[in-house]
Structure formats: structure tokens, C-alpha cells
Image (cartoon, rainbow, N blue to C red):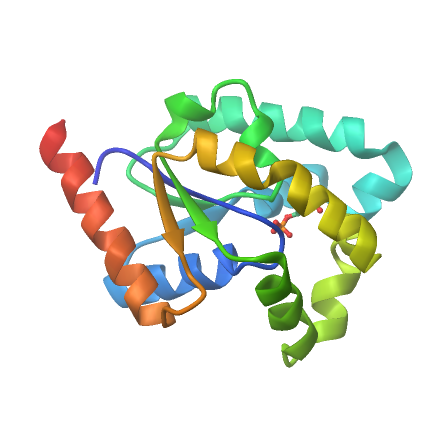
Length: 175
Ligand code: S3P
């Protein structure tokens, strides 16, 4: 695949999990925008928020988007939950939304084996009420910016990655 595929969606919906399962199943590399930022800044996302605030983090996301636009192709990219705000999203690849209800996501995070760590590293998921407000604010925008929407609630990981594989194939044939 020449075109990148970007997985977007709310925190905790499983973008990273799906991207890693895809990479493993199809023998490809995947990258994650939070990981890119953490390695460039040599600081955890959580620390960047604490020390410099959300605005700085968003600027780093934009820098990352610019870097991807010029340097990355044919790669599956899992994006931080707010990455959809970058001004060149559409130039980066096919945008695939992993969609689920807030309740499903909350339950997924709460029942995860490493639930505490999963929540602790997400500064915007500290209070359920606040996270839900953010979810409601973004739900429609995610759908608007996405080229494809996959509702993951009733699908297995394998089924989701198969759908992504199909999308990758279709996009390549169109080029
Ligand atoms: C954020 C989501 C996080 C991370 C940061 C901000 C957001 O990524 O980029 O904490 O604004 O939704 P995940 O979606 O991987 O949790």
C-alpha cells in the first residue's frame, strides 16, 4: 500500500491494539503519533501536558503531521484521539475511524488487565464526566473527517484488521 492508513477515534477505543495486531498479522510496520512525539521530545505525553500544557501538545501533533506528510508512505498510523485536528489530515492518507459508544470504551478501559496504567497515561481521561463531555463534543466531527467508519463494538480484533486490509487494497487499486 502506497497510501498511509490513519486510525483515528476516541481514547481507549483500541487504535493501538488494532494497529499492532494488523502489523503482526500482515508483517508490516505501524507507527503511533503519541510514540513519535514521545520519542522526539524524550518525554511522556502525560509529562508534556503537565509541564507545557495541551496547546504545546497540539503544536507537537501538527509538527508530527507535517513530518508524516513528507516522510511516511504505505504505513498504518495509529493517531492520538485529538490528532484529527491537524490541518493537513487529508494529505496524510485514508482516514479510518474506529467508532464505539462512550460506554463501550469506558468499559474496555476499566476492565483491561492494565486498566490503571491505561487511564494514568491519558490526561484527558482522568474524570469520567469530563471524558464523556469530550466524547460528545467530538463524536460527530470524527465521523465528518473520516473516509471510512468501522464500528468496532461487535467485531473481533481479527475482523477489524480484515476490514482495514480491504480498505488498504481498495485505496491502492484506485491510485
Ligand atoms: C488525546 C488522546 C491521547 C493522547 C493525548 C490526547 C486526546 O491518545 O494523544 O493524551 O486529545 O484525545 P490516545 O487516543 O491514544 O489515548
